[in-house]
Image (tube, rainbow, N blue to C red):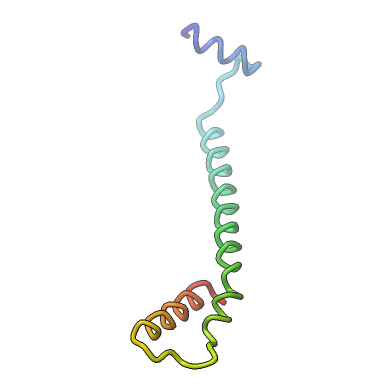
Length: 84
């Protein structure tokens, strides 16, 4: 074993080899938890837009210009995509 490998084992406080399956399980659980947290943050972030999109989708009068119709359609699409 190289001196560098021995130094890491001393630092970790163990002289035993760690099984590969153990490392794989720890990495899998860590990645899964990080993914779940990130997904929850994205969903929560998207939900913050719902109130605004609902208000914008219910104008006092329907859009009369081509641009206004496109904007109204995009607002409707965003609201549907966010699950509002």
